Length: 167
Image 1 (cartoon, rainbow, N blue to C red):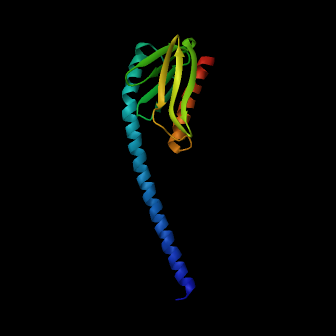
Image 2: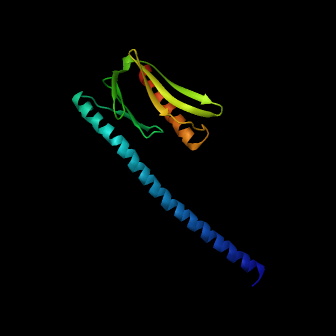
Image 3: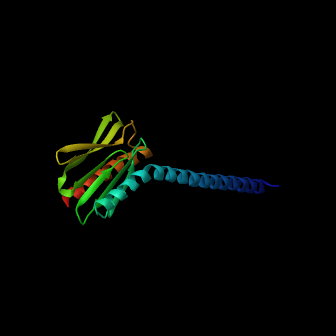
């Protein structure tokens, strides 16, 4: 055997090994994704079930829905009936129903310490009451994957509330 043949065999074995690792990663990521989805549904479903019964009792039709999880695995669901101009923000233990006109202000507040964000929360002023929805309660790096997700969740939630307020 010459050097060319040996090199081809080594490369072939290397490619087979890389293919095996890719297959393993694909299979385990699917399992993780399924487990994560089940966990999300387990947290969100009781809140959603309560909102459905409240929706029927109030004769509303929620046509805008946003489901979120914070870093403590607490579910937050925002629903809006654009026709009747009513909305609700619900968590496991509470719901806040309001008319679009009652939403006075919404903003995202970050507590920063050096390069880390210690806390991220969305404040919504409804009538004269300030409601605080904690998106991140633990210190995180805003450049990490988790940090980007938490930042995006907080910003999207505040943007959604601003759209309601300005409509």
